[in-house]
Length: 204
Image 1 (spheres, one colour):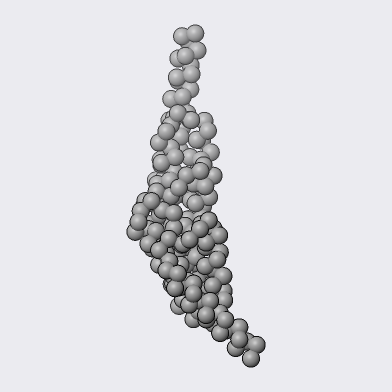
Image 2: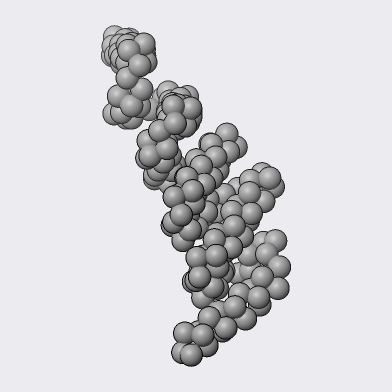
């Protein structure tokens, strides 16, 4: 029994060493994506390592930030989506830092597309930010989500699509299961008026 316990302990130490050494080599070689994949694959073999999830989360945050700093917006969006998918798979929410990085990523994406003159497409990015952060723990992040949603409505109106903007209000309410926190009733009322006018002009 003693020898079996010692054997298990030795095996655990070996696996821990392999995990640490592999991650160190990949990180030193700036193979950050491979490092994440490595830790995800070896994780099931070292279930006692409680800090592994936090380590991977940190690496994924850095992956998004690295792409943003380098000006690679597409890469940042892809890295953010991977991070979100991983969090969702284990039923977790983005932490404060990851939420802030996500807000910055979606804001930059919306601004970039707006500069290209694609207003409704830019509004789609604002809506993505809204979905991402409207349930955040931090009040400032929830406010950023609402501000992005409002901007998206304005972009759709400027694009000549007030009815699409009105539909997004209904979409947001359905997703939230109720009212949109912080959104004044007059916003929806104004959009309804503009939508009606747009439809009448269309028939005219």
